[in-house]
Length: 252
Ligand code: ADP
Ligand code: 5GP
Image (cartoon, rainbow, N blue to C red; front, side, top):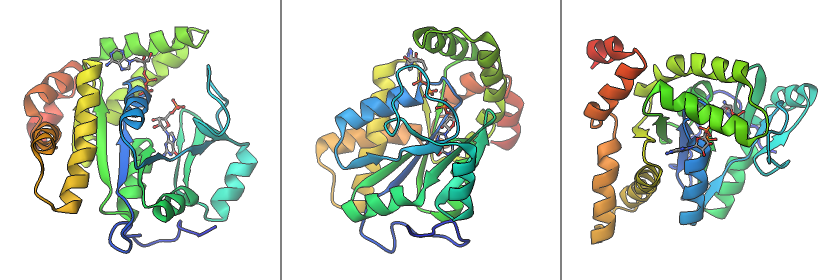
């Protein structure tokens, strides 16, 4: 396996004609997996990177589908061998993206989507400056709590302590939103799915450089509204609900 954990940027797009690297991050429970599943059913040419994790499967999750589930020892071995593009500890478990995912997507000429946390996203941006990063936000803390509870119930066990931990962490994660190229507020699901699809189609069109057809032009307008800096009004409301307005006001 290629060792991609050594220092220095990888310049994923520039050195090859292979696809775009998309990074998507969000506070847990924002609806990122739901959005990604819809996106994958709508678009071809987009691979999803299955991460390695030391956490146990949850609900209906299956080995090697949602994650590759490994022991802590195995994870550390992989890390020591430089097999991860990035890795991080999240909620007491380790998560990592295998270099092999990139190699496979490059070989197939596909785009690759990484669903990773803010720490991992920062590592990838260093290594792959051209990566397209998307941050998904829930509309309010109350809605985030509701979604976390809903998922917990659907998985057959309501774990209020775990929900509390994830809610408490959300605010700190949201503080990183400025590091991302696009901000996507997941309020009405179908609107958010369309906006996410628009972002991927837009980035593909921009790389191609060909004049867009009318539908692509419409998608580009939609994506433009999610660009960092263009989403101020709605973003203002979300940041306010999470008590992060000062940060927005002082750094805008
Ligand atoms: P994440 O991957 O960000 O942790 P999930 O995709 O598992 O979050 O979504 C958390 C819960 O919220 C799930 O029960 C999902 O069905 C629900 N959900 C996701 N998006 C929406 C939405 N736009 N409106 C209502 N419920 C949603
Ligand atoms: P969950 O356990 O709820 O599936 O994921 C918890 C968090 O870990 C989410 O924020 C998710 O994006 C993140 N995550 C999943 N896979 C990876 C990975 O490979 N690397 C990093 N850094 N984070 C990951």
